[in-house]
Image (cartoon, rainbow, N blue to C red; front, side, top):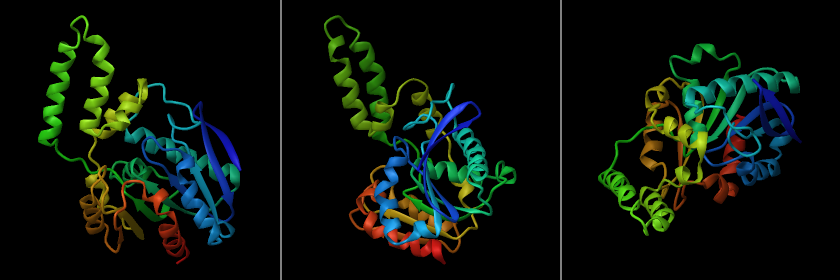
Amino acid sequence: MEKMLNIEGKKVALKVRGQGKPVFFLHGWGGTKESWEPLIWEMEKSGLAEERTLISLDFPGFGDSEEPDTAWGVSDYAHFLEKLIGEIYRELNLAGDYDLVVHSFGGRVLFKLFSADFDHMISQKPDKLVLIAAAGIKHGKSLRIRLAEVTAKTGRKFLTIAGLRRLAPLAQKTLYKILKSHDYEKSSGVMRDTLLKILDEDLSGSICHIKNPTLIFWGSRDSYVPLADGVSMHREILGSMLVTIPGGRHGIHKTHAELIAPRIAEFLRR
């Protein structure tokens, strides 16, 4: 069942199936509720939809949900999620706590929920957590990125020369490829500014506050969020379990859904 809710004047799209204790799926940057379909399909095959309400959503600015009016930071998304969950509980007549399954950017929102300045404001508390290549740890800029940024600044001046302007789009795409900034390339307007705000925040200090049962999945060849981040999160979250997918990249919730789904279902049933 697909639904459209109005949260603080913004339309938010979600997909709901099953019954029982809710499980929310939070997608990565550039993803949508549809990104979860391979994983949720495999989880349904295990019979989990007969025991749980599975809810995937489009964050504001993604999929069928409306964009924010101004650039948002992670706190804005966390506040919005808290209000959305409250509305979903009322709409579906749900009660009790819920479980969270997150990928990449969804991890940033989760970590913000557990930050010292936010945790006391949560009305509906999460229970079990599943982190799939969760983002949130900020890394220093490599020499490659610093050189690319300098190239970008000098290149813009060079390409303003008459006759070279037509090369600007190609040069920009080449630079984004060097930087591996496909998310920035695909974003526009307010969402591009939103991405910059989000990437600027380091949420590593919030990870140690998590005391919930936590299952972590990571691809060994993830080039977007390194496996070292997963190892660090596993170390910070006491009692957590880390599962490494050999050869897996950033989208293992799609490419390795058959492998991951049964383990998530088992974890949520405990």
